[in-house]
Each structure stands twice: as C-alpha cells, then as structure tokens.
Length: 381
Image 1 (cartoon, rainbow, N blue to C red):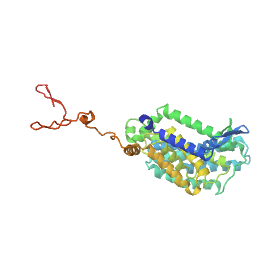
Image 2: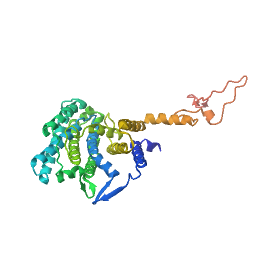
Image 3: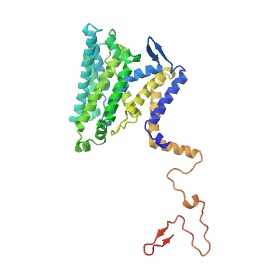
Image 4: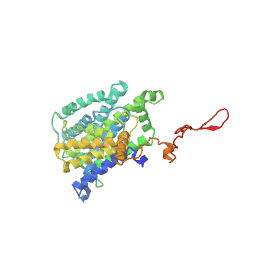
C-alpha cells in the first residue's frame, strides 16, 4: 500500500477520477458517446479534442523543465504559426487546395522551429536565464503575429484541408487526438527507449557535471527548446483550425500557464532532473476535465478559485511531508497508537516491567544494553 501511495502518478490519477465522477453527478449523460454521420461525439470526445493542443505544448514544456528550464513563449509561437498559416491560405485564393494547405503548414512549422532554436540559442549558448530568454519572444511574438495578419482577425474557414487539423475527423476520431497521440507515443519512445531521456535528466540534475562526463549538454538543451517550439507551432495550427479564425491576440493566450500547470500536476520537478510524460498527460486531462465541470456546475465568477483549489489539493496530495502530517492527524484522532519512528520501551512492550527496588539492592537499570568484556569475553548487563 505504501509503495502504491508513494507512486507520483497515483494522486493525480485519483483527482482525475474524482473530477470525472463530479461531472457524472452534475451531468448523468457525461459518458454518453454517440455516432453522428460516422463520427464520435460526446463530452469525453470533446475533452480529448480540446486537450490535444495543451498536451502538445505540455510535452515540449516537460522536456524543457526537465533540463531546469522553462519556456514562456509557447503561446506566442502558437500565435505566429497559426496567423501565418491562416494568412497564407486566405491570400492564396484557393483555400480548398491541399497543396496550399501543406505549404502553409510546412512554413508555419518551420517558423516555430526557428523560434525554438532562437530560445535554445539564448539559453544554451549565451547562458541567459530561461525565464528571461523566453520572455523576450513571449513579448515580441504576439507583435510579430499582428504584423503578419496586418492587425486583423483572419477567417480561413473555407478550407476543408486546414479544418481537418483541429476540427476534422479521421477514422471517426477527431484528427487532433490522433496527432497528439502519435506525437506523445513518439516522444515517449525516444525518451524512454533510448538514452535521450537519461541524458535530458542528467543535464537537469547538473549541467556542468554532465558536460565534464562527456555529455553535450548544450546540444541537449538546444534540442528540447526546438522541440518545444515545434509542439507550440502545431498547437497553434490546431487552435486556429478548430476555431476557424486567427486572432493574434487570443491564439494560445495563457496556454503556457496551462502547460506548466499540467507538467507540475503530473509530478515533474521544476528543479529539473526528472520528468514524467504520463503524468503530464494526466495533468492535461485534469485541466480540461476541470474546465468542463466548471461550465456545467460552477459559477463563472468562481472559476479561477475552483481551479486554484483543485491544483492546491493535487499539490498537497503529491507532497510526502503533507501526507505524513495528515496521516499523523488521523492517528491522533483515533486515540492513537505510537507515531512511526517512536521506539517503545522494550521492557514495557514485552510485559516485563522491572521489579521495584528493594532495600539493600540497587534498582535494575531499565533498558541497559548487554555488553561483552574484552578481557574475559563474559556477558555482563
């Protein structure tokens, strides 16, 4: 039982189950999934579809945080890629062309890669603090997105091929879920079935020691920032495709906070050195399930308070010190046995209370440790 509760994925999973149960209580048809026109519809499908962009951004953020870094620019990178793709499709004059859409997507992802490479250059080569280095692109990125769109809101809604990325279906399943699932599986395969994951964690534990051990820590840091940029760019395409509009001021707004929250909920240490992709996946599902419950059961005025309370509960449950203190309170409330770590008196515990001292006899030493004399080898007490 102790081994189970010490698993860092158990408590986020329990919170996710609790949120799903709360959704069922508020909406008895929550798990009902129907098939319309050959495609799956229902609340669980909507949660998975809306969670897809957060999963992508959180995957990149997980690896960045594992190297002791952080990327605040992912929302701005999503805005740049989504705005560029939308503008290119609209200006092409042939929105239904698959070739136009593929070109727009390719160039948009290339821009996201360049943005990630820029962040990696600032952090790994110039040695700028990650929060400062990515704050530069976070601020300038939305301005660049406004320049791309001419400070207008674009509507690439007449492009079926582009609509497929975030709002379309393939094999009856939302295509965004398939994309997020494939990238998650590929990332897990690369980081857990090869040495890449261990190298990332070693860089997060101690970059200088890793470098002295022969690990190219600079290249590792650069790679994770490029990957984070790629994931953010793909998330921006999903967001603009699903909403059929591209507003530079709202694309991916605050998605960096949701991604960091998903990473933290999943048990990845902000100090670097360890990460959990499965935990990040659970964290992203918690955020979207929580948002769905807020819509049907919580007043909009208390939305932020409710989300903060859930996050606090998850963090407390993940803390071994907090769990130990809570367990101690429960034991005291039951009237208590001895607290863990307290040593009982051997004589009392065995029912062998030492007899009272009688006149002329010294009292027996309680708990005296038997010893062997070096000269004779005889046992004394």
